[in-house]
Image (cartoon, rainbow, N blue to C red; front, side, top):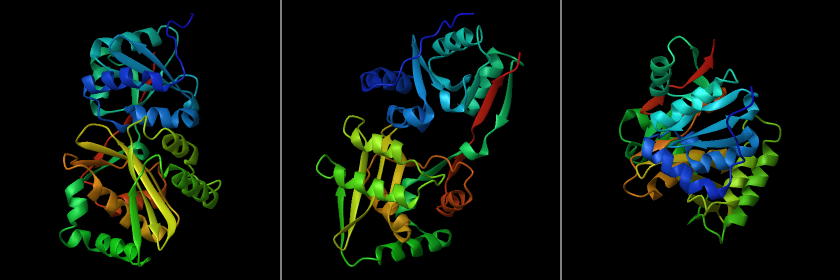
Length: 290
């Protein structure tokens, strides 16, 4: 059967439409923010299809039948899924508990679900990460102080057109240090930096004793939720300190930090748990089984 859906490359011209749909639906998963979709489109081979009050993203890196679960209103999501299953056996990624309930209610016994622990999002309380009160944060306080102590003079600037080239250089050096590593997301980070203003992203760049050493950047999923997308440090000792300074610089209305997933990488999982998340958001994969 001929494909009834038309997928197109993700472009900046779609930003307003996609964000309007996402916000109206109340979707707060970072992966659906336009900044994330645009930055990761090359690595993940994303293409997008709009239908009424919803959109669907094809995830070519996961296979010909792989998609992010549709984002938007219930009628639009159902239209997209109905159209898909006419010619494909879709596998949906980034399925939240609410999305799973939707599929179970609308397509009883038609989807098989698997928990994706490696894709769980780590959610942090911003104020708790700044104040670091109590015994549970003792080790984190130590790491922050240790990172700050690696330099006598710190210069911290908000990322802007005047220093983006410096951040790109940090990104390039970081990629060289991690060449071939599973954390080498340098291409997505470069895309985000080159379109930082257009994507309404916010971040900081750090100089330690006169030398550029780190940058950190992300986007606002909602006025209350900040998605920490990229953190590139050339000296790992200052990793926790860089994050702490970012949290302190965020607008007052931000209450929550989404630190994304750990991809099943042992060291990354240990680091995210070490920072004491307030919640792990469960994620599923839903495969059409008829």
